[in-house]
Image 1 (cartoon, helix red, strand yellow):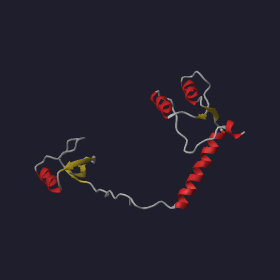
Image 2 (cartoon, one colour; image 1 turned 30 degrees about the horizontal axis):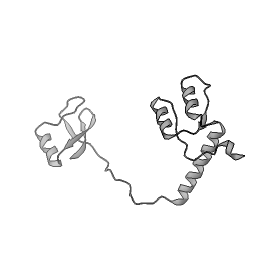
Image 3 (tube, helix red, strand yellow; image 1 turned 180 degrees about the vertical axis):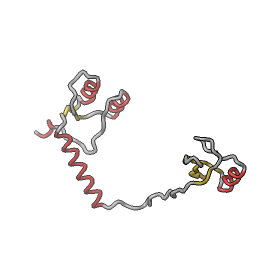
Image 4 (cartoon, one colour; image 1 turned 180 degrees about the horizontal axis):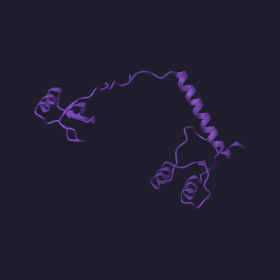
Length: 140
């Protein structure tokens, strides 16, 4: 299969899938190619940018990765400063906030994969943190 970007006389751009370039030419010559929007049979190939995939074996620059990870850790730290740690109560507290049974506020804590999956299924907006967060009780 080959995919062509096609354009009609009305300016509509759309994709057409053909068995080969010759197949497109044959169908076009017999008047079988038309615009799905306006029905125009005046269709030509539109300019296409080739899809060139990124080189798959290129290793990321270690300095760039280290810098990005440090920035991500700083961002997480700033977010946690404005968030209440609720520990193992996280699933229950997140659900209560979502249902309006508890004060709306930013929280963080721990949940098992199963608990997190159930919260997501219920529509509770949660997201895992990129770095582990130590429990404040463990700092003593």
